[in-house]
Length: 543
Image 1 (cartoon, helix red, strand yellow):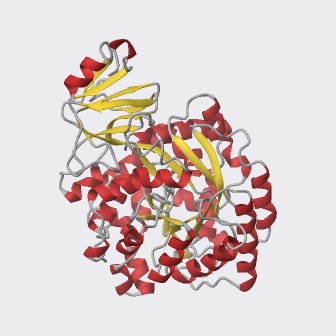
Image 2: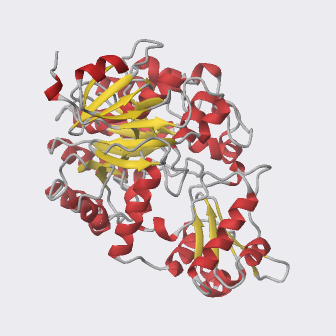
Image 3: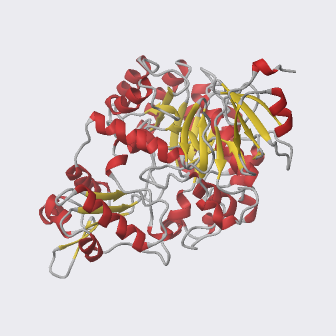
């Protein structure tokens, strides 16, 4: 029994605290004591008041508390760099609210400055399904170039933005369907494909390092407002070593109120072997503490083995497979994880061929190799992954992209994508990610809803009931499940004495609220260790 002079800094009392993985069904604690960034004890309000006399007390007034969420696949470093420049439509359901945000932004930045909402939202999230027209964007901000982009699916530019990038001339160098034209051959403002998107992204410009730091700080706060305490960032296209300067600076200044775990990617096709070697040489330089840590190599390990959305013809050649096997062997020899993008089962199978060959030389069972996405993974490849000790991080992309996927795959695969029952039954380590900030929404509760309900936002598909997760299993995947990928399942992802006190005080009871309202959950107070990452003011801040 602890004496009162061993008091915790803070007591959260009169709540409904779900301690995380391993909690008996229906069990809730009433109070939690935290100190020095760690959980000290859980129990009743009366017990902990007696045990920690003199501690600062926060009355939860019956609110639900859960371990701080971890996003297992979130491009936060890239997203944070321009976060403060962009509008974020992820939580909007009304076109009027979206257009009003453009008006407000134009008034704030002044004439001639860009206004953008690039990725993280999709037309199916709006009531009745809505994409803005060029005319609507012109009316909202006639004196500003405006560019909005639905995930990586379609972009819409207003007249000023079309003129700013010289779209009519630039279209001559793009594929035939990249730029929509009217009857007179003039661009309508609707564009598709990365080359067309890049025209507008380049015109918007590049933030300074100070602007990237400010944007990352703002992003971290917005994430914490949803209950996120950490992310695994998979790297991705264009993520060269210099792109991490902002998160490193924020960490060194003590301003990174979120735990970030990073994977390093190749950035140039044909040069993957050298680039991965360069990353491995200095993988843990400067970045290796409880807040910011470089884990391993991913998600773009070899460009010839990256199957994008799984919607275009794609085949991993023998040469690409051989190079991936070489890189995988090097990564395994360094004793670090690999996290690789794979949507289709054919891609997954070839990658597993490489990993099995590597495993015969350098066992990878303890290295936390993992896949992202795995929408079409087969039972055979699930079994192979299990035998290797490989984990999977699934995401909610199909909540948005079901119609586009069904057009290519047919309707039947959407009933089992991803095959959650098979993954869980096999005992694969399971995490949940968002694939934010461009390819999907950063809202973790949208992901929760997708895995619980299995319905696409546009009603195109419904995952079979056997492949739905219940609320507790989903939340375990978003907490303790994601901690596994960074070797931290013994210190985060649950609220246990001696573990980090990463927690979120929720705006409603996730476990009992109506299913379709889960998407609207947020946090009233988010603690990450000894830091207040977010407070709405509805719950008294600790002193």
